[in-house]
Structures are given as C-alpha cells and as structure tokens.
Length: 274
Image (cartoon, rainbow, N blue to C red; front, side, top):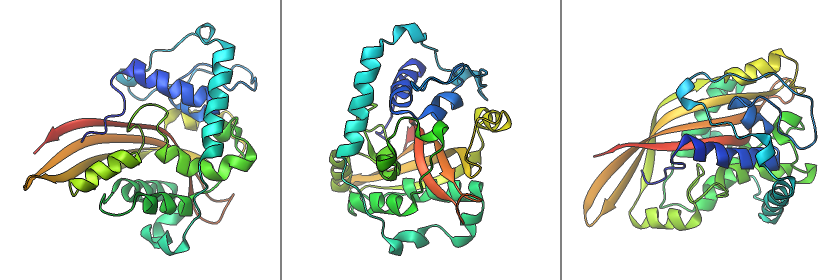
C-alpha cells in the first residue's frame, strides 16, 4: 500500500506533537507517554504516561526547543484550516453501515467504525465516505480531547481528523483527493482484516486519576491489516499494510449510543505485495 504515513519514530513524534500541541488534541500526547500536558492553556504537571511497547516510544522533544511564537503560528494555521474546511452535512441514510448491536459497546463500535472507514472503493466519490464520517460524528467539550479547538468548529473535527494532510502527503485514513483519483484510475479498493481493539494504558491512567471530566468519552487503539487491490495494464496486485489508529469516541451516559469524535494518531506501514 502506498500510503505510508511516517518513516521513523522521531518523524512520527514531531508530526503528532505539532498537531496535538498546537490544535489541542492533548490526549494524543498523553497516549504517547508525554510527561506533561502540553496544552498551551497552562495545566498543572501530570504524571508521566506509559507505553505498552517500548519500541514504539517516541523521542521526547524538550519543551524549551519549541519557540512560543512558532507554536502560536501553527496553532493559528491549524485552526484556520479547520475553519476554512467546508462543513460536511450528515446523511442519515448512511447510518446503517454500522450494525445497531455494535453501537452499545465502545470496543464493538470502534472496530466497526474502523472497518467501514478503511474499506474504501476508489471508484465511488471520496465525498461519500466523508459524509458517512460526518453522520457518525459526535462532539464533546472534554478538554483532554478538544483542547484549543473553538466550540463553533468542533462539529467539523471528526471529518477534519480523517482527511487533513498537515502531517504530510497521504497521512490520514482517507487519502487526498489527488491520491483518491489516482487509485480510482487503477480500479483500486481496500479490504480490512484482523481488526483488534484495546484501551490505551495512558488513557485508563488518566481516567483513574480523575483527569477526564466527560464520563462518556473514551479512547481506543485499533489495529488492522488493510489490503489495497489495484489493476494496471490488466495485471492485478494486492499490497498489505499494517494500520494503527488511536481515536476518541463518546457514548453513554453522555449520549444514548456511541459516536466518533476524532482520530488522534494514524500510521500505516507496508507489509508486502502479491
């Protein structure tokens, strides 16, 4: 699969740190083991989080290396991008893509949401999947999730988080419009297998420490194998990738059933081609 998001742990951390530090997706840093809540709003020092696998540990960048004026500039750029993005209206006719029984449990919902999100037919309009994401979107005022995102823009956060390319080309679950068109020309589509869901340890630690104020919000890490099928010059091929998402969801008791808030972190690493 051609959509490899980041090439090294340092590059991954830099990209995530920018997005999280500046637009306010504070939970992303918490999930990746940062020792301090990086939100510019100025919260007290918090316990250092833990990573489930040491090999995934990011290289921590000292806070002193980030010039405040640069951070402020990127904050404004990120918010401006979010504000400029056209609002995608939901379509209730698309809500049946997730079985009703999966909407009552966060693990089941997370698995089904990612299955639908990553099962992409590039012969269909790209806007269709963005409309589906908007249909599944839910909002929260939880500071560990929305950070500096203005209240009037939070209803755009779900779609923005799956489609924005600020971390580099093809760095989101939904490819850019140009990449979507390229894959459509190759009669491309994806299939998804081996979906696994877990609650990140740093998130459960935050809950236990009382740092989460919205009782309906939770975070999940979802891993899967995604296979991209294409046809070129009459020859079909399949490229497998190992994909991981960390995402926020909100459900009972805040709302009757589970909904999607945003993708905090997305990675896709090629496994092989056949």
